Image (cartoon, rainbow, N blue to C red; front, side):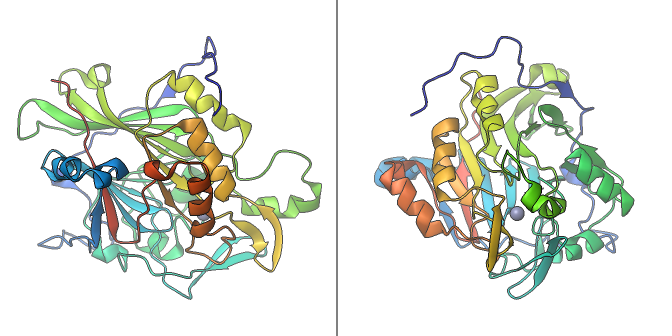
Length: 367
Ligand SMILES: [Zn+2]
């Protein structure tokens, strides 16, 4: 295990805060730009199986406890890096990609990839409406051309400054571009059913590097295929309406790696968190290799070994791997990751979701 490091003296978790994005689950914008109103009833997710913390599967009583209605949040795995995060009334969609088996994405000059799987939800039209989209970076395996064409221009998107430029160029109107360590607070307007505290989410952009450090002249032309990328710290919690972000109480922390390699910049994450626990890590694996499996020149996402390194660094309660087998440019299989996890003795801290499965958990309330 990595030795705990002294927190750097002057490095706060957030270096800047964007204006808050209020969420109103009663007034969500339809996901399809051609829709004037929501489908009634709204589409439901095709849930296969609910999973819980692995230790609760070992202890049936604990599992029962976890199935009580006190689980108030979940992550539903649609495919690749596409997930739906639900916290009470809040719904956030990550990296929307609804391509099907055999369809291709263009990832940059000379780089294409073929989808090998189907998403759990067949298309955007079959999704329940969401409050906002978290987009790690502007790459077609995270935001495909079908989504780009069909998505309502007023749906809020939180992403990188680079992707903000790309999205605004095609007409998206509510895009926030967060640089590394920049945060944004997203409170639900109005009270929850039980009282005066409402759900709220705070998102902070985490570092990510799609390409390895060092001389890259040999692969320079490939770098056009690797846009800047964010990871995310997603804090789920509660706030009293009058208090704003000052009164935000975190009840659960999710870290989403984004498409990154295991680079030194990631070491700043635990340093800046200063002991605040990551409850759940969604790790983008796959060992994505470009320009393709027949010419594996450059690996741009973590492989199995790096994924385990990241578990050790971030030390989350639970890790859920995503982005591991959906495209033919992914050269590191989930089985390799399972072997590495087993060899590292971390098996009771990883939950494997199939597309269509959800992981359920509890966002703590202190008062
Ligand atoms: Zn990707």
